[in-house]
Image (cartoon, rainbow, N blue to C red; front, side, top):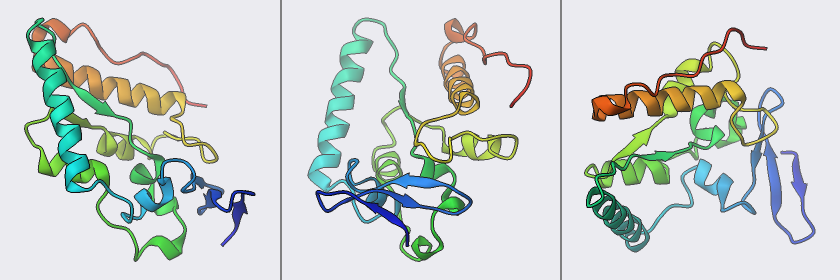
Length: 166
């Protein structure tokens, strides 16, 4: 496959389908995470869970709610754009693991709302790992809905208004 080789010996990106590009492993083992081959060990996962529980407790003592919004990687929203050779390699991701192993944590999963919205427009830039403006608005709407369901005081935080996609 076409990969841009960096002088340090790693890959900066991996070409996907339809002009998509995905971060390589030089960026936090990104591509290995995409195929479920780089994941949190039990100690690392428990450290994250413990950290979030501590933050949640400290915020609760101040009357502040905690919602953990993990911005999903592009490959977890548009896996069909990853190279075909990765299909048999894909497995559960760190977010899957945390979400399943620690259901007590208030982790909000925006992957499905982004997948649903992707039929209406690009939620990620094809050659960049970041949300498009449309993807960001979907992320915000999902967070606003989650907060509104948590407590009526958040109901004024509605979706962002936009009139068209370009």
